Amino acid sequence: MEKLLNKIDGIILFFVIYTVVFLVFFSTLNYTLPFVLALICALLIKRPTEYLIKKFNIKSSVASLITTITFFTLIIFILSYGIANITQEAIQLGKNTQLYITKNSPNIYESFDKLKKYYDNLDPYIVNAIENNLSAFITKASNITVSITGKLVSSLIGFLTIVPYVIMVILFTLLTTYFFTKDIVLNKNKLLSVIPSTKSDKIMNVYIEAKRMLGNYILSYLLIIGITFLETIIVFLVFKVKYVLILSIVCAIADILPILGIGAVYIPLAIFYFFFIKNYITAFGILISYIIISIIRQIIEPKIVSSSLGIHPVAVLAALFIGLKARGLSGVIFCVFLVVFYNILRRVDII
Image (cartoon, rainbow, N blue to C red; front, side):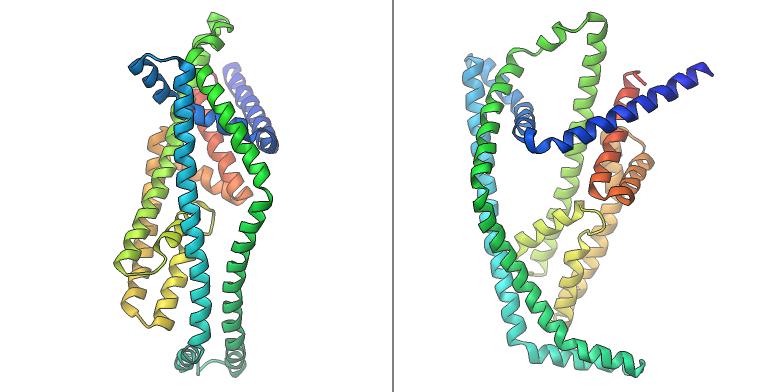
């Protein structure tokens, strides 16, 4: 009985500490962002830095400088290229959508007239409501397109206003990454040397297990997003859908967001091709692809995440569902990492 009570006390203490750390971390992230990013970057380039030191027998400061500059150059190039292409496609998509709606309004009305025969048997009040809202719907669709394009442009302009802050974050992250990388390579065991020997092994076990599980968790979701991204690119290329890059990126982002999912892109696209383009093969192909990709997503997510973390799939599903119902995306992050850290501490016999 006493052993059970101690275990319950340990679980409660863990939950309280985890909750406090979680809230403090995210509430202070505006102030600690450069240092958090720098620590992540330093851990990513740690091995390449060690490789340079051993391979070319150079100082850790020089190796850290080389890997830091190379890493940030690569990241900035990828982001610049991606943002430029996405922005160009987004603006072009908005313009073409508005132009299509303007030029093809008669065809759109004709499509709705043909659709009318399917609801002629409905209540006259409902039929009148549908007919009265057709024009408003088309106007609204055009306005939404213009609004999205306008918001995109205004976001870019707004981004320019925070350029000094962004430059400051990048600069601090760059400098801090260099120092973190150099210190991590030089002083691997410095922290453990100030910790009593009776505790150092357990702390090292926690660190190794946390590093392994968190790394696996991030990689597993990157794999899931990557699979969705590639599947979408293949589907859209096969059916010759325009704006493949931006639509695939939107699908990948929507795939990780609660509730939204890839249906936010696939379903409107299928409707557009069916009613307005009248390309029924493409419309049905997109719809069937959406169903197949959704099924694949539901099958692989619990298996990939649970296998990478060593956690039962039911625990992962419970964390996702409870977090989603409680607080959306932030709730999912809280619950998933709660399960992850509990499993880490359980494996090293702390709780």
